[in-house]
Length: 192
Image 1 (cartoon, helix red, strand yellow):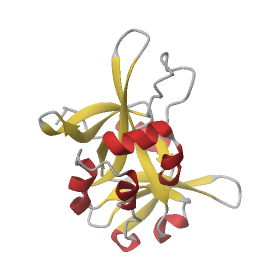
Image 2 (cartoon, helix red, strand yellow; image 1 turned 90 degrees about the horizontal axis):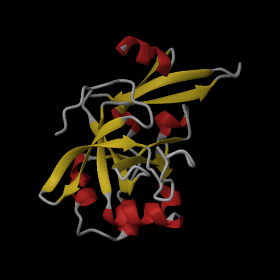
Image 3 (cartoon, rainbow, N blue to C red; image 1 turned 90 degrees about the vertical axis):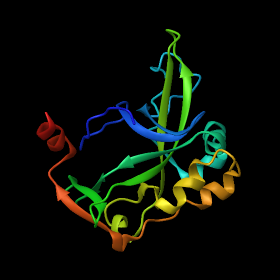
């Protein structure tokens, strides 16, 4: 696995650890969070896609190809969500598994050569409609894959996009908990 310090505050465009299939089997690698589109060579023309809706994948050629050929797991201990309050301000939440164990998001990745000739590997987290716990917070959540589905998701021989997307189901809300926090910026301040 790549040497990367754990962090509670990871923002898009940060390098994150992903697990993917490689020439020698499964491997951990660092990738930029936010899928860089191949036609955005200078990475300034278009914002990277840090999430992609599961239901949008069949209509998106780059994502459709990545689901067939370039899937990854993105390990995490939790994630953030927000809820719009009646006064127009946002209440932020930290969401995690009740047992405190890490889990993995379903992701896709791509590789581009930037204008300097450097190869940049980037990834995106696939989102699905929320389970009942998160529905009260926001309408979408990362697709969390149960460990028994990791092999199927990473298996390069599985290239049926519809069958692969069918693996992405709502995580059991009884296995999750959400804590209110001040804001995601406060987490960044704590970490320094």
